[in-house]
Length: 466
Image (cartoon, rainbow, N blue to C red; front, side, top):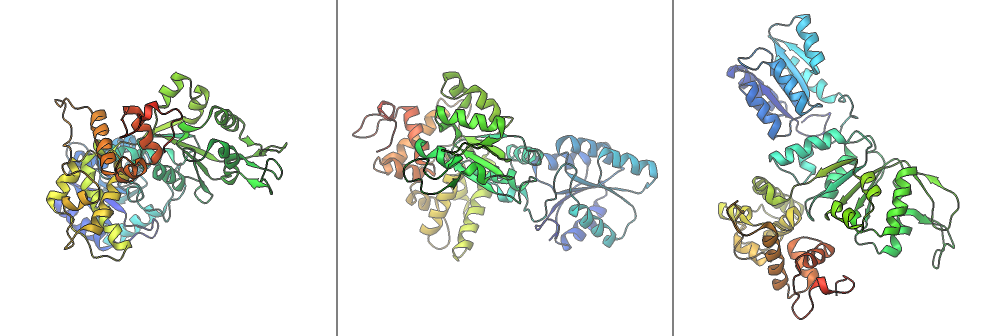
């Protein structure tokens, strides 16, 4: 266990000598680290591309690609990955070249095991250039609905690169992919993590209340304003403001928010004075904002203010290789949190989970696993337990290029099945899918789904649920 980071750091060791790899792996494992080994620089580079690694230890002299070339390649992929180079040729020029290339330290062979462990501990404690110290933070994949897929490894790297800055970030992704978790992670990995992380749900807050929630008001500004109230923007001063479902705000609120982003000042409702607020802004949406801009329902200037950097969070169906790991994690966490015996996931259950389209993404998977853990018998979660929790009897298999059924049709079918199971009650169907009521209403309207005994959502005059 590394004291600097508060978690079991993952260390990649690259050396063409298998004996040295075995010795280093044993040393690091006994010291509480998680060790990954690779017998060539190319193999090590593949590990860096596919997994989250806290520290790289590499030999300098290896056949083919050497340690210095590996270092340069790694720094292109992960500029802030910490590196220690090992060499039997410990000359000053080599050491200078290594430092210039981005290595944090240099160790000369032969070395004592305790010297290596001391060096590893020292390097992991150091803040990385351009990023604040990360003491007490768990590995990025542990606090995010993640996995080991290439798509998530790329997202992890982008988060680590963006977090230290104060630029505005726009998070794009379907309902249930974990946008709020990504926003929280950007906050925790940045320089503002000691200050507030304030969440504003723009989708569920009525338009008439959102202005007061965001900007606050003074006593007497309107009926029932019996005292001054600080708004959520002001509450996020020196911290991070997360605007969830930003695509749902009214044109009037778009104007006020744009003015704040330009001036970084707010004025409470009913007040004359302006208040300066220093906060980072992260916004999220599951709607197509460029299309909203094109249609004129969302301001183009506000869109460009919000999307200085854009992060797209992939849906679960695009990273199915993560599903077994996520399912096991949710089962273990739920059982541990509720003092329940561990639950097993047999191969047929894992296969079922992998083939299901998950229109509600990771949130739907989490809900299904937790419900299945409660319903299962003999400590084994079977597909029938998932069906009892509200999922269909037969999951749709992953779509191939030759399939005539589109992703949109798959999602539409899943929503219709959920509505049927819920007796056409939209909020219950949303719970089955693990998505919000607003999200299911949006999808019902999008696909023109006819609600039994009612007009389609697309025909509803005000777009509200009953």
